[in-house]
Image (cartoon, rainbow, N blue to C red; front, side, top):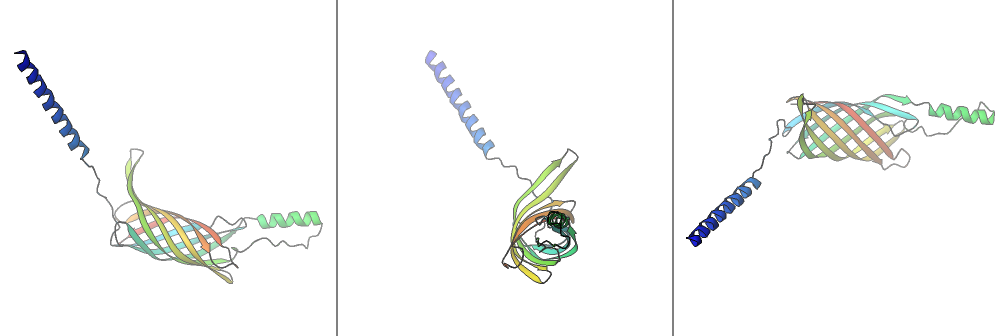
Length: 215
């Protein structure tokens, strides 16, 4: 009788263990994936941004950008063309400070400085960039809203018109798109241009903020 009781306990224990392991395996195979609420795949997007070139200490151009892009798949999009036109080339006043200091020390008001003014006459930029969608995600906005966004990295080519010099560049770009609804979004964009022309600035950074409309 005692042996029978022991066998029954052993069978019950083995059955409970098997059930537990099976339930654990099934639980580990459960996947919870949220389908994207918004998508730009097979859609044309028109962007309008304001860009700022912060790297130069003497002049900081501010440009207005218009761009057209198309997303071919969930992970790749091509910004076919971006035209940036200079609104103003902000003078930081650093050149005047340096010149006044030199004139004061030399006691000669006719002395003129030869500081870098290569971005003073920035006119426009034209570029084209391919983007990889690194991540599609959503965020809880202080328990008031859910924000959906793309995180993108891109490589492209650009051309800056700087007065009488033209600079051809390789552009590395990062961009985040925040969806407002099915058509409108906010864009934050930043990157760096590496120039090939030694007679023009060879390193130009840019920051952009704007919006887009998807057709």
